[in-house]
Length: 133
Length: 133
DNA sequence: GTGATATGCAGGTATATACACGCATTATGG
DNA sequence: CCATAATGCGTGTATATACCTGCATATCAC
Image (cartoon, each protein chain N blue to C red):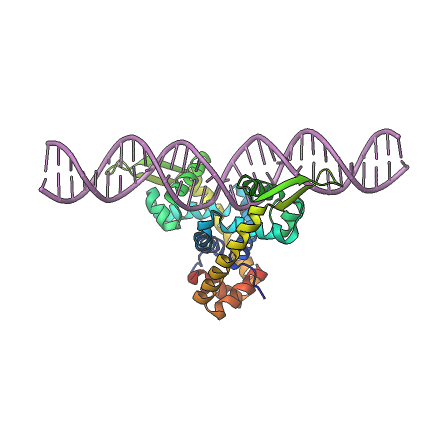
């Protein structure tokens, strides 16, 4: 008796959960990945792409492209490091900061709703699992 | 006291877990998404894109593109339905069937290894969570 | 039967993601 | 100092994913 693929099921669950957060943030024109990135930048600015990549556990090139999207939306800016000319200095723009301030309560509401839907037991299991995987 | 984003953490965990399965299947030149799709086709062939989409809980256009990749790898074929000319009839090719036969034990080994690493408690929690999300 | 509606697909567009390669800049060894 | 190594990025390439639009084919209502 074969168990279904943990990975495939987890991927599916992640798509579903992402859609919930995406929908919540849609009025602001951002998705949950962009929200996470904005927040990460905000907490570390100015920050290089390499550091952002390691903070997000994403490939540097991925972060670079995702930041570019934020730049196109005029939510973030990228300048060159003053000491190390190789480094990109990523910061939020004014608009980015403003939008993030609107986004946080929306995210919080979603987070709370998700926790309520799952119940404390499952939330704990989720936190444990995330750490274990 | 703010809890980190469930969604973002789950996305991260999913990326990590996917990488484990991807690595295991890499010798065959496929990743876990392709494995899941091959398997799904195998169990339902011949199958239309719409049905495949609903089975995988993926957008039809996504499945269409993913199947196209399998076709390019010569692992699957797509012909037109005989009754309904609109329908695509997706099947595995010989190569697809052969490769799947090699892939299944690799997948099983990974599945077992993951279960061992997590332990029965967490595996159960994972199954429960996946169903709940 | 024919016009309206529904269904199935392909393609455009866009984001998220990874890996490999190459270029520029910085750091290091001698 | 200078050659070499290390570091930081950008880009090419590729897959996975979703939404929307348009086209072809079926179905249905009358």
